Image (cartoon, rainbow, N blue to C red):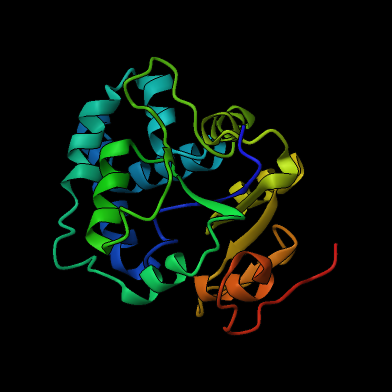
Length: 235
């Protein structure tokens, strides 16, 4: 087990702006529901949202209730996204990651996507060499494990080699993922981009609008802690 803390980074809608991919991904997921379950567009959207709310991942509902092959789904949805030219190298994000003090903190990817999609995103962003590992939803397994289920957080802790939840730091754009991570004992920042509504009740201790604000809320982990101010609501 490492003595250094780990900062777990979500990937989709977290390492890049939500507007870049979110709508395209929703369209492909809805299309998959329509074509493979013979649903109307309206019913497909409702079932998609139902599965996402209940399981944290649409594909988990498809596998549980419709015996869908998750690897086929991955090929037709996540890996089918036309990301070239949409997601591009991000020098500011790269500087943020390079400013992490590696003697104190290890950056680690933590995603509900399959490994192919997660790897593709960080390569397009030009940051694939700056993480020490990745915990992902393994679509080759019979039973899918994903955030916000406790088993997924336990898997991340095991793979990252942390012995205590107090050494786990996490940033994600999902309210549920942040809420459950904090309940487990992790220190969590909920990313809510400008223009999106603030939740009525905070998901966790920290709420930020930009990853740059990580420098402010956790300055002990950065060699250069300049940045904008984050909100730190009391619990």
